[in-house]
Image (cartoon, rainbow, N blue to C red; front, side):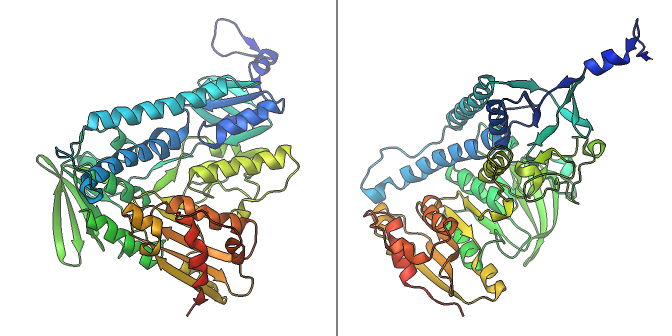
Length: 477
């Protein structure tokens, strides 16, 4: 059989078939889970291709965890410098922010991390790194810049991106998202943040500490609505204490140019209002990067929001095709993406039968002081109707916090009254993002909370107060 492609000479069917590059495994996307999967497949002797269209390392390395926590560190340094007198340290000059140097430090750390991912892949056995945009043309076949790749196993790790709300006037004004704000080499005069959740609040504190005026606009009655009301309010008070302004219950949002910046119009509790600012940051959630993957051509099912539908083993509707990381809607964090890799690798190569539903929810909000969260919120525990015990302790009772001069926040925990197993906890306070892991490990081990009292905890630390917190458990009413 001969196929004429309009070239000077016909191509035979046999030549056409030979042009397909065959692999044992293909990974689309070099975010958190993708490189680890590629390296593991290569170690198992599989001829593996990993495809990345833009920047190695994904959201975490390029415009997520790595750069934001680098900015958090710079912002904290500025904040502590301003508080130096509280510790008996005298500075002879006011604190000044050199945003170009802040950005240069952030960029250098990001580049080091990105290059590290690329070097890891380049040095992995049986792994071919391909740069370009991949799109499915069949269930086990993808096209990349004119190349046709085929494999019985394909892993999708394409992550997500910032959503863009449909607001009146938005197309006529310049806006920032979590990626574009990383390119700023100056401090905004007045940063308006639309969205009072995790991303928005981190940037609010960062830029307030850099010296910007910051206003957070949230359509709900309170910020970070998935948290318990006492957690939300405590975080709001902490940020407000540093000068961050809040406009809650804000509806009817619209944007317009207002020289030399922009204006946000809204309807709030006090009626219609207009807020003028120099910059607007959109922090209204994220959407998966699945719109341009050619998923219909492969028969891969997605839900109404565009997330790839997966089962408990992270398999898609097409046998041999898996979706890991943010694109599957089963987790929105770097650590859940990494856990997706662990689940898939263990099931495929180690004879395990791990399930994503067995994962205990854990995350942090990296404001200062940070919030560490694990398991269910108090509201979720109440909704189950089960008998439960709860305890709460202010951070002012923690000696280490007093010594550090950082007593804002509290610890709280909920326990099943019958099994004595920890159901969930929140630690809002100094080192809360680290201390929460002590509770997480007890939960993973499915041990009673009393196990925590058996260890001899190091003094003075924040963690040593966990047994004291648990001593205060009382029936939930």
